[in-house]
Length: 118
Image (tube, rainbow, N blue to C red; front, top):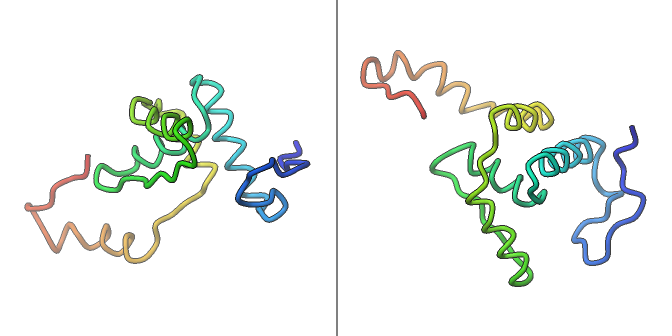
């Protein structure tokens, strides 16, 4: 399957050629999930970012009112667990240090005061 875009759309901030094969693969999964949920890729990306943490919020940069409305609709989009799993798998993102160190040492540092994340 060829995931590369043949031509960069007019008005795009990046050229398709400047993206890696991994970038294109992630974009492909985002588009698949968006199609399945009758949402836009931007809504899926924003909803996915919001689903990762209750304290970290995406910053949207809309060029016009239509794009802002599209981005804000992500607040009403709930991604099913299987969609989140597909997005996570596609990105292969791992927090790494210091998050892995904190997770590993928190039980003995905080003991019974440790509160599990939701």
